Amino acid sequence: MHALVSRLPHLALLSLLALPMAAAATPPATTLLRIPGGAQGLGFDDIGYVAALDRIVVPAAQSGALVLIDPRDDALRVLPGITPAGGAGKGHDAGTTSASYGAGLLFASDHDAQALLAVNPVSGTVVARAALAAQPDYVRYVAPLRQVWVSEPHARQIERFAVSTGAHPALRRLGVIAVPGGPESLLIDAGTGMAYTNQWRDHTLAIPLRDPHVAARWPNTCTGSRGLALDAAQHTLFVGCQEGKVVALDLDANGRIIASAPVGAGVDIIAWNPLLRHLYAPGAISATMTVLGYDGHGFTARASVPTAAHAHCVTTDARHQAYVCDPGAGALLLYRDPR
Image (cartoon, rainbow, N blue to C red; front, side, top):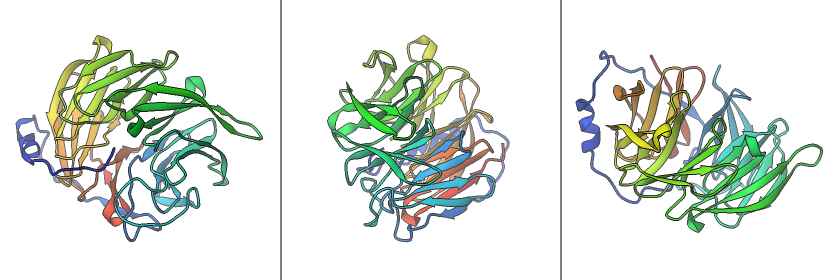
């Protein structure tokens, strides 16, 4: 989830030809959705779909806003002033860059104040805040515990907070989970009571929600472990590898590797569409997004969609659409998956 530090070879993208390919079709062009305040670029990082709100939630980095996109008509609603606005560029270490929803609130990072914020999504006001021990990366609501977890890679830990709602919402610090060699990415599987994160190189970690510690460490064959996505129906965890690869791990078999597939170089965040059974993997270096089908046994290449340089984050909604961040343009690229 951090800025790429080197250019990687494009061989992985070329080797997509080795994958089974669906019937050839020219993918539809992406639609550009400009984010207010993004004319000079925005340091997007973690974007996500919130089913309870039926909105794409975009922490708009140094603009200081959270932007909610209605996937029905692409209408934008801006919640300004979540963090102070200011600065420009592509780096994602300013303003707010990660958010999660739960208990009727949006929880967001604040890089400038090194804090966790609770935001009322109706009024757009910050209703609670808590200081963080280190700079935040991912923010995730943990529904079974009514907690918020914040990954802090520079401190090699995940910080935990209890959430109180009602007339006076509050965030109360509970402690930290030590994550040697990480954490990179953070995925909460409320259904099975587990959390998953990566070490920066070649391992994925499993953490029980109710006994928060690193309980398992699984090799994933990545040179640089990055994003995570979950196929809850088949208990499969997908890992994005920065060098240009995705890997499927079997959660019922101690993280056994089921399959892998080459994608464009510079992978960071990945997203899974359970309706289409498609995995979306944008490459920040290749400036493409690879669309893969997955059947529980292996991957099939569906499309390679042109995106933009540094386009490293993605999410998908319930309407067969994928949204890819374009930091340089301060915009999102909307891809309508032809199935």
